[in-house]
Length: 97
Image (cartoon, rainbow, N blue to C red; front, top):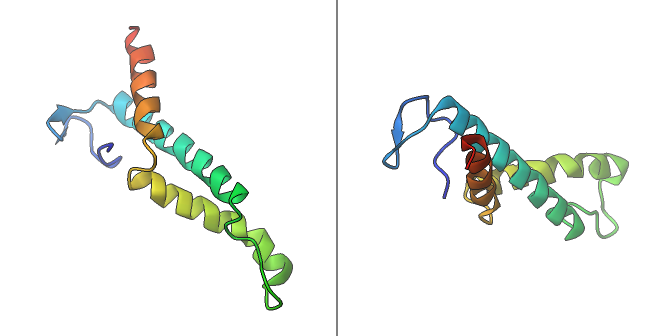
C-alpha cells in the first residue's frame, strides 16, 4: 500500500524519506487509479437508477460525483494496486533508469 499523500517533504514514512517530487508522483498515480476505478464502477452500473421511485434527471447527473468520490476513497485505501505500479514506473522514468 502507498504511504499517505499528506506526508510533508523530508518526513520518514514507512522507513523511507519522500521528496516533494515523489509526493507529486504518488498523487498523480493515485488520481489516475481513481479515474480508472470510476470508469470501472460506471461500467459496472454503480449509480444507475432502478425501479419506479428514482431521482430522475438530477440523480442521473449527480451519479458521476458519487462514483468519483467512491473511486477516490477506494484508491486512497489501497485500491487494486495500480497506483503503486504507476508510481514505481513514474519514479523510474524520473530517475532516468
